[in-house]
Image (tube, one colour):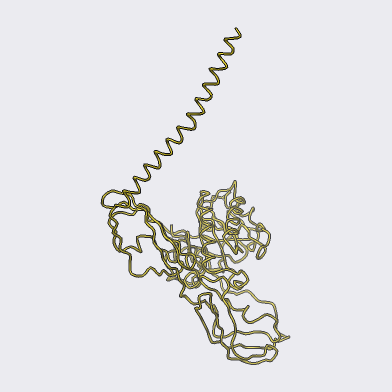
Length: 414
């Protein structure tokens, strides 16, 4: 019996050692095989025929939307993944790709490009600027000074003036970015004495646009007429609004209380979304954004999605960034803003909704570098030359039954 136990122990010991030996040897054998295969592949690739002719200029403007094939004039084969080239930062960049040549051999290839910026900064201003005598804010801070690539271009005023003396001063506003591109604009600084007898109360315009008139003029089989609302509209009678012919609505969810501020839910958001849902009017939502980077834009998208859980939202979730009067305070480039909008819309789309960007015609055409997603255009005119929008905010002085204040009227090209 004792001999049997000893024999069993010896057998187990041998089995364990053999397993250990094979456990070491087999992976080594596999590694050797893989190395041999790779060496053979490398030898084949080295001997493979490569005929690539690049376009003459591989100096690429910053933020260009190009693919690898856009840089190649001819190639003896087919590119496997014609990916977009990263042009979001300046300098020499390595670009890599794979292609299958005419001999049916997969070949990895690398080349360099140089990303440069030759676009001057943007000075968003008119030909004059009026400032109250003794104003403490710097003139440079009152003028939007932005750049496609540089987060905070150097902006300054040339010329003599006295902010404490009433008068008109001929000045020059200048801006320079990190690449040395310059912009300048002449303007007249008007320093004025405030009138103590002038009323500070601004009276609302008496101009009115009736919803029924807009519907009569623009309504078609593939065009719907709607509104967008926030807490400013107060208490809404949703059934009356529907009976008046309103076919859709955008609702303000809320936003942030300034740059880096905490989130707030619009005072009428819950009431509005429940009210429109209850009468069957399709809704979209928007956030008034204060995002200053991609991370904050992502947080905003997730916050909005959290607020609309449990409600029916068939229309887009909108990235509404309009802080142009305070743009200098955000310390970001116009490219940064485009990246924010893209990230917001990506998160929204990945969550099963549709993402949209809101903007007025001038800013969409002259300031935004790229407008991602479905476009919601603001242009208060009887017609617009802007192309590519799905929604058009046609006025902000609309009158519709069921709402006791003026409201924005919108057109949806379905």
